Length: 471
Length: 92
Image (cartoon, rainbow over all chains, first blue to last red; front, side, top):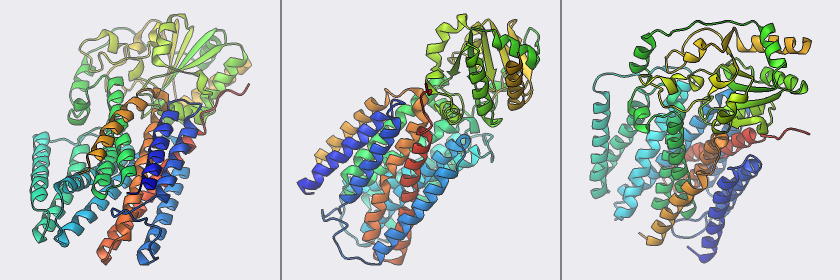
């Protein structure tokens, strides 16, 4: 590698790091994304082969036509997906793009491996291991993301489990690792090609087998994990074909994705092993739901709720995924604006796992033009909850359940919650008394200061807005 | 293997952890999407193997890798930008 290319790659690495750093503040986040994209463009110009020669200086041939056509097709697919996807379907879109990246990483490694194997070219173990790693992790990420996508689309979203499943999956993984070990030593010849193809197929199957037992509600954690997997596969590809930019970019994604996965699990108060192997909600949740709850549910009508809201001085709104499903974000913003005009201080309390991914709720509210300085994180809002006059809970359930604080036997015990019950009055907007995804009763609904406003979130909100305007 | 590359790899692991740990949870979704776009750099891996492909099978597989990689990198950056352009401050 010439020192000129080395310098360019230092620049590329700095652009990627700055890009991710700018993403850490709402003010600079959009610029951060563009900085990272600029890094990608610079890396493209400096693209070089293992031998060090630039890709762009050799003569044009059929392969270059294929590269151009393939890039344009991918560009069109990506653009159509990116601009047509609904904001509520964002997790699926990330899963899809991630799966494609994983598939590409696996294919690149496979082609490199097969080239070496067919040419019976002596190849260093330090190159074989990254190639096998990238193939295994990349194809696993591809098939796992496909299943995650389907689960988020509502296909077989229940956990699929059978006795001995973890044992069987462990066995498959052992076979895959054994094959990889064997391929490391016997990396050339026809039997290596056959062994490699078997390993590739098993890795694809393992991706499916790994994600199938996990429930739809846990898919964001899975996608985040697979995102970091793809990053590592790309880094391994970088080792195999000696491309520094791929190593740095892939590694940054790998380590950040791992950290993000752990943060998500922490917000749900569940160890990552429990998410991946626990098949959540299948038994523990339903048992806890069987125990009765003392207290009665007190309904409220929209008119009365509107009066409570209009004459409050501080209102906190707790939005949940139910609000997004009802497409009620714009109605929520209207209500908040209307109350703001009357001098009521309105804030939104965002639980770290509200929506379907951390930060998903912020995106949904931002789409409805709610200014982000009105959105407060859980840690900031909880200490002020005692002074809040009305807490309006819209389509959120488990994240406001006091059982997380009070009931040691509850499956969500210990999970950090938004302490809605500390407000003077709590109004819960809900379609019915059905339980949330954890499948447990919500003690909040039975508290003395809680009133239930039943009905479709959007219809109820429109009624509230009309009533506030009239009062 | 060149140990310098290993050195860079280890440093990148730590930089990734350090830079991310400061991101507020409200930006986690755009962040996941943005990092997802960055691993779209695999497009270049696809370009490199396709440039050297010498059989129809390798050309076909390399072509698929380029399409996948391009969809990942372009779609990833576009969808992240679409999310982030909505994060606005209240107009005074």
